[in-house]
Image 1 (cartoon, rainbow, N blue to C red):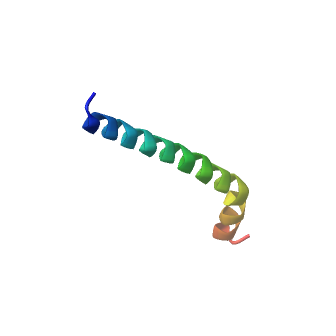
Image 2 (image 1 turned 120 degrees about the vertical axis):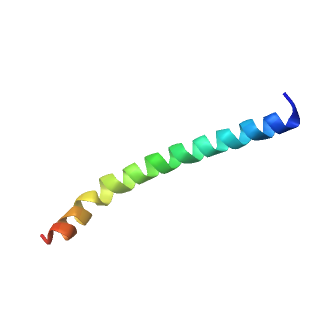
Image 3 (image 1 turned 30 degrees about the vertical axis):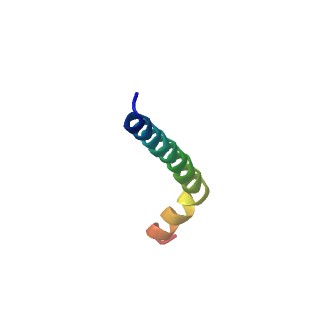
Length: 44
């Protein structure tokens, strides 16, 4: 593989790791605060 291919593979890896971190992070935030937001929207 040439240098360009290595750079592309590295970039793809970084993007996939970032996506996984965001997925887990947003899931944790939803678990922690989701019920509060839904209660506020429903006016309870």
